[in-house]
Each structure stands twice: as structure tokens, then as C-alpha cells.
Length: 188
Image (cartoon, rainbow, N blue to C red; front, side, top):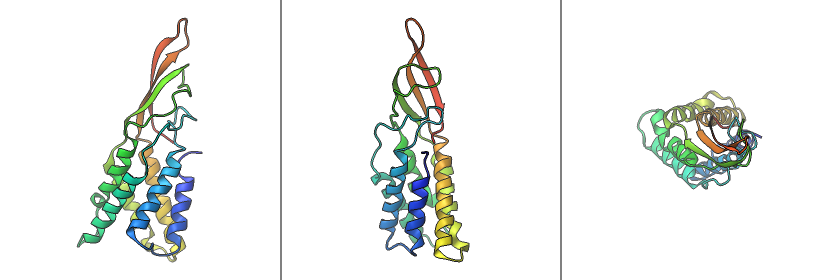
């Protein structure tokens, strides 16, 4: 299952009950939900090659908490820049992540490594988070607002994953097997 379903549903459930008790709890909920779905992510061209290890959710939690705090301190409407701490934390989360190399890349046989070499860029993700955080302002109910925010936030996360890039290295069929490197772009 690709990224998004658990994340989106968790955020809807959390926000639908009304204002969250604290920015800390909101940041923690977002980060924990992100980690649950991140465990299911794979390079789009190598289905099933899930992460071997992931950093914990604490960096993402700290990034969202920093963004929430920054938004509280602003004397004007937040801009996408206010969400750079959250976006940067998500980008940092993916830096150097190792995916299961035993799932062969197209044309590959036996893998040795499958590593993220470009974890995406933060500015477009920050803009997506900013858009998501404003999405519920026109809602007529908490449930509707929660859904609008969660869907937009999920969309921003999926768009970011499309930027994540890596290299699968291993062998290709041949006698003897030949070295093979497969660059992949995008994770699902």
C-alpha cells in the first residue's frame, strides 16, 4: 500500500474533534502518522522495496513544532516560509534512507544497495504544507475542515515523495553477472 491512506485518515480523525489540545500534540500526531505510512513507501519503479531502516519521528515532530511556534509568533499571515522547518525535517528524514536491495530493479538480478541520494527539496513541500494548513478555513464544520486539511497535507507529502531519488546497485543477468546501477526517481 503506498503512502497516504493511514496518514490522511489519522489526521482527519485527530483534527475532526475540534481544535487540538496543543501544538505539541498536533506535531506529534502528524509525525507519528507520517512514520507509519513512510514504512510502506517504496521506489516507484521497484515495487515492494520498502525501507530497511527509517529515522524516528522526532525530527518531523520538532520541525512541525517549530513551524507552529513560528506561525504563532508572526504578526501577519504566515507565508510558505513559516513551514520551512517542517518541510526541511521531512526532507532530512529521507536523506540516505536504505531501501531493500533484494527486490530487483528493472533489468537487475541481485541487489547490493538501494539508497536515497536526493531526498527532495523543501521549498515546494513548504508551499504544499502552507496550502494544506489554510485549506480548512472555509469549512462549515470541524469534520469538513479536518478532511480538507488532511487531504491537502497528504497531497503535499505525496508530491514530495515524487522528488525523492536514489540508486539501486547490484548485478544484471549475464555470465558472469555484470555490475548494474539503476537510478530511480520517485517513491510511492
